[in-house]
Image (cartoon, rainbow, N blue to C red; front, side, top):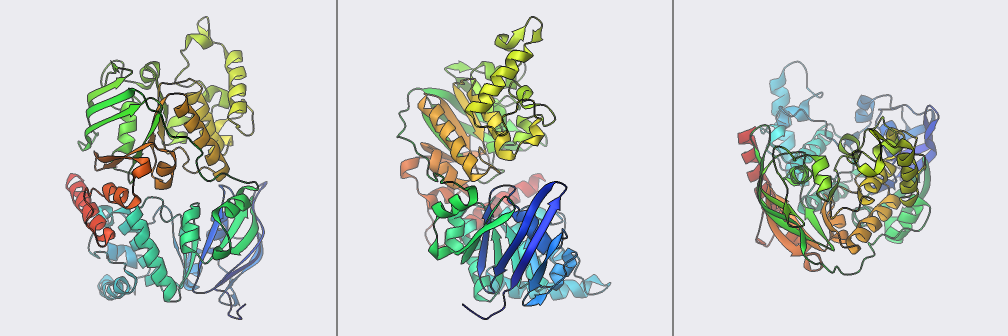
Length: 533
């Protein structure tokens, strides 16, 4: 035990939003020069707690102590003055400003910008060398990769002399090589005495990079443990309140004939940019084909085309029958009639109508099915009864078909969409980001349903930015970069480094520092997109 004052100490923090108690009497100590992880399910109160620390919310009760001194933090400027910086999951950058302009924004030295820019240029050069945060100060942010934009956010905080950094889900949109580089940056910051608070739902990252981890559940702090003295299984149980199977329990696939065949698929978006550039793939009965890649490389457009939401050229066959890619018959309902089910990437914008009830949402896309018609109208009583059965089978909580979709948690909204599509017994199921924003307990259930569908002889095309999820579920893995398929590998033989390189458009292992090769490939893609932009 050390007598050193904590970098951050929160004492008895409570915060309610109406009847919802987001934080209940939370106390936590974060020691200086450490990386302290905070994990918990959705709605556990992690973001609320950090928003109080950064001055976005005022606590109803409790105290904040910074470096041994009680500190009032009524707003983010007070947090910055206290030496606290925050890197948000969704970056707070002005896209058409340069890196340099973003760094000094709000921290100018007087009314003249020129001296401020000159000072910032020198400081950025020093910070980049010290912490491996190299980024061109004169490049507009909109032309930077997500990984480079994240560096700009870190540089902004360090420029304001932050000693304590809060990072919210920092690896959500990074390639494996970029995530590894971020961890090196965090190691460097820790070695220089900086304090890092890391909010993440990825247990692997907690185990890899943190010194201490605190677990939150339902607004309360359930445990704080030394990372070296715990395990992913113990942390998962502390988060959920029961034992959770972290691995996907599945037998080897027994694939048969191809149910989904894609040949030379091309798609041009509304701005004239070619997003799919000759995609050819097949998905066989009884297998899961995982589609890996950093968001924005054509995976979303592929799902939209296959789901009937966007037009394309090329050939798509389901069960040997060609489906139209433009004109009449190119819509979601026709795709479902052809045997394609679709769980879209964004459940709230594309999978559900949030103001409608759960039972109404269970038939969207299938509402003209003769089995649920009563004359010229839908048989609402039958639909409600079937919805109740689906909600019971898929463990939707609360199991109330009359409740509006917006009143369910994210995980239960996802279960409603999955129940609708899986219970229709499609030949081919398209699944986009199946567990995005979903609690760890619901992840376990969703994975089980996907594997059960595979074992029933269906073909599943899985899109996920979570490489761990791709590895856990897939029988084969295809990697997309810049609208192309870079390669396909058997999941049992796939190597994470190789897939990471393919995700950056590199087909041969360059040896040495993979991150430098990834940077070069990503910058090449950025230049191409800048020309179109």
